[in-house]
Image (cartoon, rainbow, N blue to C red):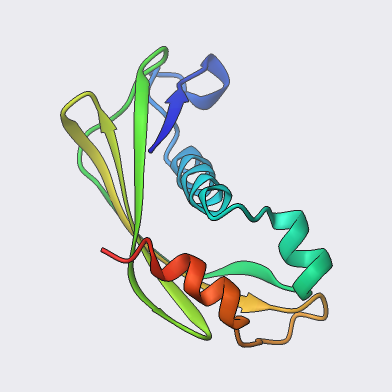
Length: 130
């Protein structure tokens, strides 16, 4: 779980979180999940020449978040194979579900070519499959 504080810069003129900023919150949740595997984006790049890029994102906005809310981003893996990870992500304000998202990421190398995840990376992420 990733904790997010909503800052003034995250909001629009109405004080609600601007819709595109939820993408940043979801990205932080996926990054935190990576960190739980004891890898970082830097290690993935330097050791494996691997970068995760978003291929598809489906977001269902249920309720708005507002300036100074405290949010929680829950991230899990629906499906994984050597060339894709399908994340299930939810953003909550306490017990209220605000956003539900499915995000498909793929591994590419530094040249942008799709690659297969090495065994140790694949195994590390498999532990987060729901």
